[in-house]
Length: 506
Image 1 (cartoon, rainbow, N blue to C red):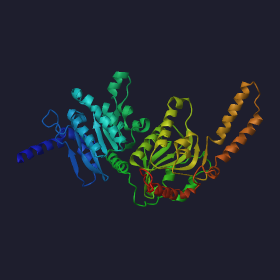
Image 2 (cartoon, rainbow, N blue to C red):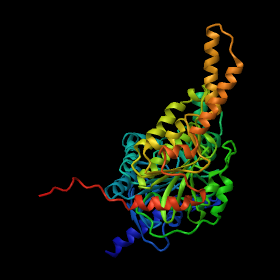
Image 3 (cartoon, rainbow, N blue to C red):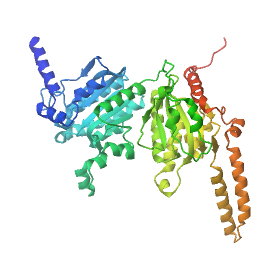
Image 4 (cartoon, rainbow, N blue to C red):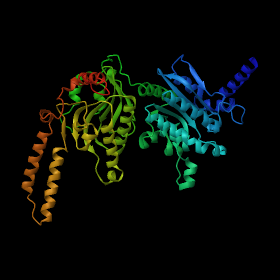
């Protein structure tokens, strides 16, 4: 027995050695952590790690461990399945045993409803063995989507290359973190792109963290370095994996609520940053922003109000573009996955118009956002803090989309469009009608009409007018926003659960 244990120890040592001293030293020289070092930093301090299939590929031509570390550990108090590529072994390439080991980890995650964390750095498939891995390899991507569909969180942290099929690991995960200047995610690298299309492009512009954070939206968070990426992953796991309400009352905001009176401008043309509002409403002024570099006209992220966890969607620059709509839809899906209530802070003039935006799909992207709002199952609470015009009202959970509660600030406005815009549209229509009949357009009458329409819409879009007609649940003092939201959140979290049928009187 001792001989057999010694044999196991030798195999375990070989697995821990990865690609050997030479490649370990090279990896460290690049300022990178080893796969096991990444796992250790991810886990809660002094918590156990149950390694799975550590002897995979033993007795074969491949390195023991199969260039990947898998196991079960506790991350931010949440038991998780962890899969970490070992780039010191042939660049983390996936061989037949890597695939089997990874698929088994996914199977365990699904059977036991454990969140799955992928620590990604792999050059993709080991091409000489493609016949053994190409067809069965699709199951890895299938399993990720099934985990997500069943409400089991999936997180991908990209430390380096994730090429070809490997690019779909972050692509199909619920939440992604890319390390700045290190992460490279693309279906084909620069050489293949040049061969296939003739385009010359470097790997950073093709699939770097900055590009995916600002343009494609694939990166939900761009971390400064590996340790920062792991910190963000821990925070994400604690949030995504838990739907139970917080029990603490939460720290007061660090900034005074009195400032909200100055932030809320009566002139809706004066822009303000909704983060300034959140800093005066959220517990401890703490806000964990989601996709801060992408779709920047809409601020999304996580926080707490009087101890109640919330997801926040807040308009930043009025107009909603396609990236903002796509970002909102994804964020709403994440909130539903974790059972987190959503707070909408409306200040929007609607979705962007124009030929360029129509061609780029603003209708379908806006519809995607509105669909997500309409079919979301978590409680919604809406506060109109400025403008709420056009279809933007729908996308930001206006009254017709049945938020549990809807309040407005005194400066708020809501209508099909702004007074000047609506009057202008009517003027253009009347002018075109006159021209079609060959009539001279009466400019004086036009000016009177515009003034009358603007006055009418200005009156009918005012907060007090709408509240008087019960289109909201009240106009509130901006300084009371935190208190009002806290009360509403306590109500929606204490609601009675739905029974299977009513009570029968016998």
